[in-house]
Length: 183
Image (spheres, rainbow, N blue to C red):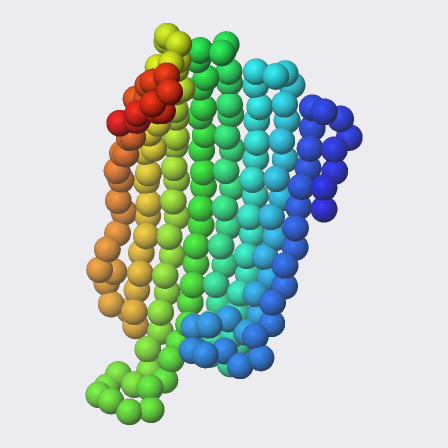
């Protein structure tokens, strides 16, 4: 679905539903319903704000498998002039999966339960600069904070909260007739 009442505002969305008659494993969903909504506001040629919401519910009731994912991201783009543009944003993701399995053979315990829960928060920022003709500089970075906790049959999680920054940069020069060199 697409709706645009004006050049300033647009709204897009989709809904998907999948039913798998015979799941391959006990952690493959039998039913999977997902949706996505994207709203974009562009009050001028220089600024735009976009929000992306994604929801997913999956389950396989015969195996007591349930999976939910939620994600929401907001991005702001601002072009100061033809030489400088900025971008910033924030993303929130939530993931939860639970199941229980009874093994037909093997050593005890023959019954196992899983619970995997992760929440991610990502902050991002970037700059695109063209200080002189034929030269461009691009720098972007993310700061990620995740609170993943995976648990099997009541055992303590093997991993936990993590934080890390990441940055990338590119410098490029356009040589006449030879092409563009980027590092």
